[in-house]
Picture 1 (tube, helix red, strand yellow):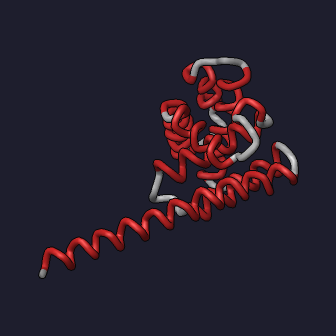
Picture 2 (tube, rainbow, N blue to C red; picture 1 turned 30 degrees about the horizontal axis):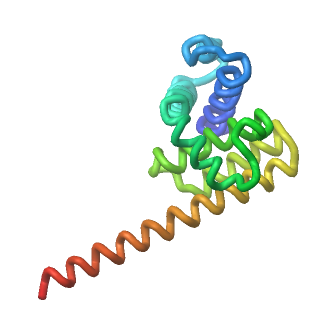
Picture 3 (cartoon, one colour; picture 1 turned 90 degrees about the vertical axis):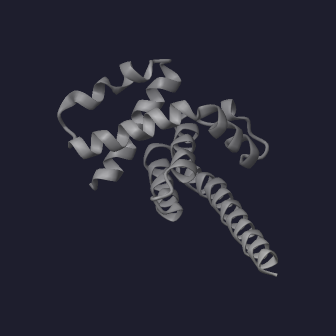
Length: 152
């Protein structure tokens, strides 16, 4: 298993503990010191956990927007935390391609939840990524237009 995949799985397990057991991030990250993971894996997992926890309110509002008909609290525990983790990656770690994040999230949902969860997660994250790409193209077009107007 690759370092990033292992880091994502460790982060998911940690976020699940924080969410369900109401553990603090520090308490939940005690598992990071078990010696089973490389330093790179642990550092990536730590970045994911702390970032997701810090941005959780924003991330949950994104989930609420895209999970039509579902509140964040009504989602299955694993699904909710897979989405939180993946949305953090998509929004705040631009060096990771969104398609990679989505593939990894779908695989984790299938592994730790259900095949249906994989399709659900894929739909939400796919729609989010499409909207973000459309916003980026629109912003770039406006910037080109503004530069063209300035040159005149």
